[in-house]
Image 1: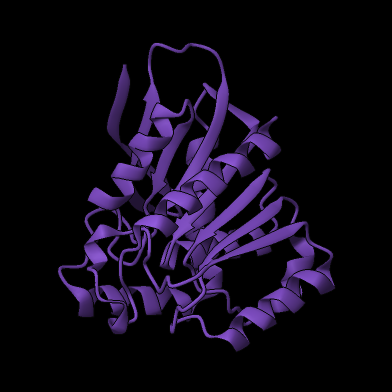
Image 2 (image 1 turned 135 degrees about the vertical axis):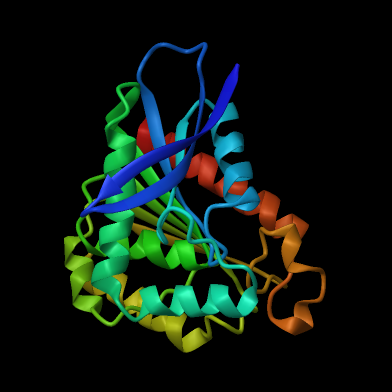
Length: 239
């Protein structure tokens, strides 16, 4: 039976409330997946992904980057919060690492088989976790920002990297993609990128609407294809 519940954890005196999912009928240790939320914080979308991952047999934890009770009420507040962390990458890395430690502390997680995934803002955070040197098997960004103020930190990346990108995403323009590719090459990272034609920002989220002209919209094909790409990546890195 899939068990879904809030998970409280702390770091540096700050309280966080993530969302944990797993099959409680399985008693053996299994891979863990850290899910990093989009700019809206831990909510229905991140929780849905946790449930899907639990149904695939993983122990999944939606990390709480913002802190317990800090949940933006609308787009403006979400943008303000996300931009605050994008402007402070050490803090973003610290919060992502706090979630990772909470996942690693679960006795049923095989700590040698952990991946981090993230959506939009969370994709940026997953890549920053990689650049911070987190010693886990892999990192996946779904329509996340690729830019970083410290590209030389890519030399710290230990796991494999998968970027799932909307080919027409105006929020991640071609020059940002090219800079990321050069960053990965220079650091000799084991990386791959899949670009989905016709997809813009937030292509995995039905809540983004259906008008690509707005720059963010759901794309059913890209959503399904990217999820399958992630599953294939997990098979590779987890064995």
